[in-house]
Image (tube, rainbow, N blue to C red; front, side, top):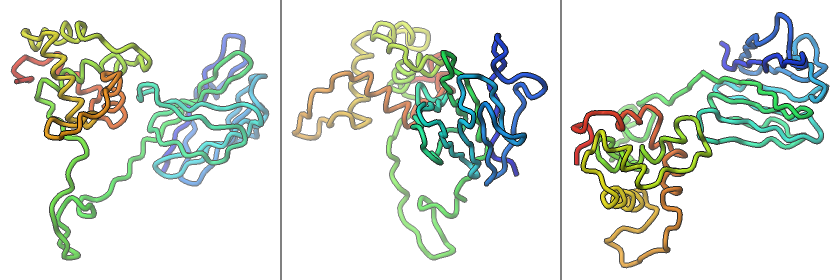
Length: 263
């Protein structure tokens, strides 16, 4: 069963990228299989005929539901981007072997004499724990039971605070990972179709509430005031995107009828 799909970089205008019948052809790897790539690899490798790419630049290894990258360049760092991760990426240093890549959709960026060559790697295979094996349900087969594990972050997607959080996350979820966050006034305008009574005061109140709810600040029940939280919106968006509290499909709350986002 194939678990990793590799898509070569496109042909460049000057012809220094992959050309001929292999251009953009997908290479499929089964678990345990390896794919070398570079300017001078064998017939079983991924040829990237660019004079800025090392003769043997690296190696991709399929590992079931994920893959590893070996950087065989002695001087150039490779970047592996998550195109869906709002700027999420990892760096693989020169000579690093078998660096694990956790992204389902990835883009290896190869710096090559002024060009940035993208090699896409997809890991569509998903392996999941069976429901009966988890600790959040009854396990009659071994006689153990107990209370379910409390969620790390409890959010209600029907509440207005979630719509505020979605509006804050929207620019980066729309494919602009380094976009500045919207101002409070911009959030108010974004929410007006679903929340006509939105105001600066109500939006700011929800932002403050989210900071407490997501444990960025202590709640009112504690006597500790906690440190002043600078960059509150940035902290909220960073946390929400990092732990998938808001996903792209959640942006529907910004266009849903107002009754979908009740008080």
